[in-house]
Image (cartoon, rainbow over all chains, first blue to last red):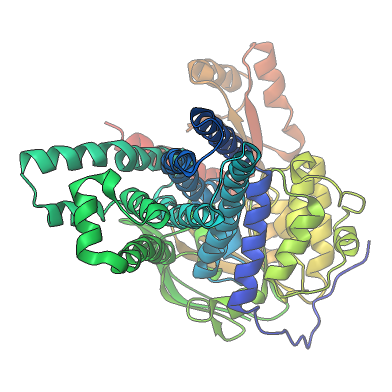
Length: 292
Length: 303
């Protein structure tokens, strides 16, 4: 062992840049996520369910035809709607709250970093893990479709993958906001699952009930559906793949007729809001709140 | 090096730190001494910029709130206990925190060797004992050779052997021109590591003395703090009184004043009376007086 000495005339360099710290934290988060059980289980579940959807759709069309691919896409959209928000919400919710619970958050904040660097680093690391998981799941589905001889449209698969990732970013952002507010990881994850249930099931039912009970005008119905990021994803992915929203009924027809090519921008704007607003709020909460 | 100027901090309506001012020169080693809840840890967290507080704290002229990154670059911090990610490797942890401190090239082997952890770099953190984890935290704190070390009851979770080794390691570091601010409950640590002792109670600085003066004042006589289950406490009181001691009730057990050569005697008395002792501490007379005062205050406020 050697004795360390603090140099008497020590000239210390400046603290690392925000970009360097953010990337260091992002790499750490990505590594932790990839090693974790949740990443493995969600990716496995997503891939297996995606393959099941692909097989069933392919079998139903006798292994050929674009209609088969359309049905598969619809199945995959519904699968993404269920699995990806749950995956992203729970990953985001556990991220900061579990560090706080372990005492790691205050230890990290005792290092030469800013709180916003930590938040952004965790966000980017988890986003990369989610991208890997989504790509793996949908990539496996695309391979199965090709193997079964379905005329897949690569562009549609890229759209689906990209939109699923955008949905994941929005839900990750919401999850991280929950994580900054909760003291315990279990509370944060429980809250995230509650939010997921609300978005997936309750909001759809509420929208249908509201439309009937309040006799909502068609434009109001479309506007209200834009509030739910899952609805936005559903409409956008169907619009991107089929260029029409007939399957959504009058609200879909209204949207295509009224906004036409502007729909992409409207959907993109909604998703960006869902990514940026919760993340900004999370940053404010984290900067004001004790890390203990 | 560390200037704490009229710092106050509240948790809700409870005052944790009350108008504390301290000036710690470069190379000084200052112990924060006081009972649990005195405000030692809160003050350390304020110094690190972890909590919001009133007043100001600067480290080498850097305000810990406005220039937090610059200020914390000067500090190596070791908490009481650290919950590293279970799957994290020891070398990985060194590399990760080195990058956060702006260091590009760090040899994990040398870093670990400095704290007696050579050969453990390939392990996962969860494979390390409590003492080894604290050494790892110290190794991380020393990355970049920071001029200030801040330690928060770092030996509280260690056994006697681990504590002795850790204090010996810190002793070598404190003699190397580094500024040290640490919180401790243990007289041996203060005697070994500190030059000055700041006594804190209920968030206020009660006294600042040299370590030598503090130790001389404190080490006369000792008090055993025996943790005994509630149903057995009255029987233990009677047995000890019959054995010639003057015990008093305290929160989770009894306080028994003993002379330095008599520390084992109360254990014999209670063993003969078949009364189990869950845990014990040898505390200083000052600390014991404080424990007793608190227990008294609790009894007074309990309806």
